Every structure is written in structure tokens, then in C-alpha cells.
Length: 193
Image (cartoon, rainbow, N blue to C red; front, side):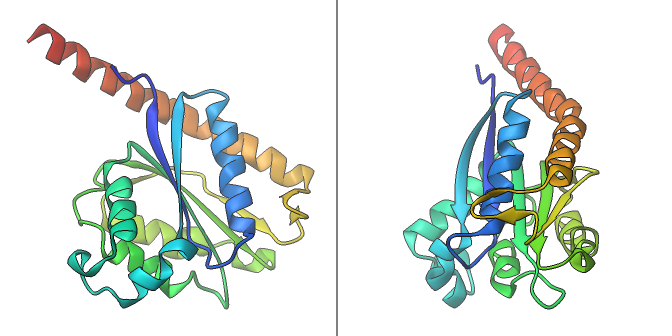
């Protein structure tokens, strides 16, 4: 019986090292302090050659096809992307264009973004939330945005960002515990049947 959430962390950055990856890892770590999650990570930079030329799942190389299956089968997604010129990378959007349109229905998703300044902070609500709304995913009410000043030298460098990480994790916790409870109930029902 699973007592953890299969969590896939999707980093929409095309760079390595990546501030977005640092933020996403910090989110996963904070959530894991209260909720049993088992994480797998996907970095768009590793999939770029295959994703960029594919117009369908069938055209994907095996590593990219596997990444899509991971996303579709996850119990919980932590998804983030950098913001450039007011938008997330087009290849990030294309990755989700290849996802089965029913695969994310009801799935909790925590949204994150990074950018050079605070003025891009609304990208979570104006782009990411609408993208996952199309999939009928359960976008958690609070996302998290970080500026380049808040993540420096490969680490979180801001007390304010640390406080926001704590807040986002605390707001996600009841929802994720509910998902774990549903998994437990489904297992119990199958055991009795």
C-alpha cells in the first residue's frame, strides 16, 4: 500500500545550473518535512533535443517519452519555469502540449517560477495556472516566485523567500494529506473486495 505521493518535479529551465531547479528542490524539501513524498526530477534541458522536434508522443526519443509517462502517472506535480521577457520558455509549454489532455485531471500541482525581477511574479497566475486549468489539474492556491537576488551561489539567499517556502508548504500540506488519505481508502476498498 503506498504511503507516499509519487511526486514529479518538472524544471522548465533550459540551463544548468538552474535557479529554477534550486527553488523546486527547496519546495520539495519543505513539503517532505510534513508529507510523505517520493520525488523524481525532470529537467527540460535534458529533453530539449527530442521535445523540440516532436509533434507527437510517437516522435519522441525514449528518454523524453519516459518523462511524459512520469508526469502523467504522478500523484503530485511540482512544476516551475524561468521567466524571460514576460513568459515561460516555449519548449516548456510544448512539453505539456504532448501530455494526454486527461492525464492531469484532479492532480494537485504546485506552481513555481523564477525571474530577474519581481515584476514577472504574476506569470504563475497568468500563464501557469491557466495552462494547468486546461488540464483540469488542481493547481494549489499558492504558488511561489523567486527573483535572481533571492537565489545566489546555488542556494536560497533570502529570509523572505524562506518564509514563502514555509507558507507554500503549509498551505499544500492539507491537500496532499487528503490525496494520501484517498489512496489509503482505495487500497482498503480493494483489499476488502
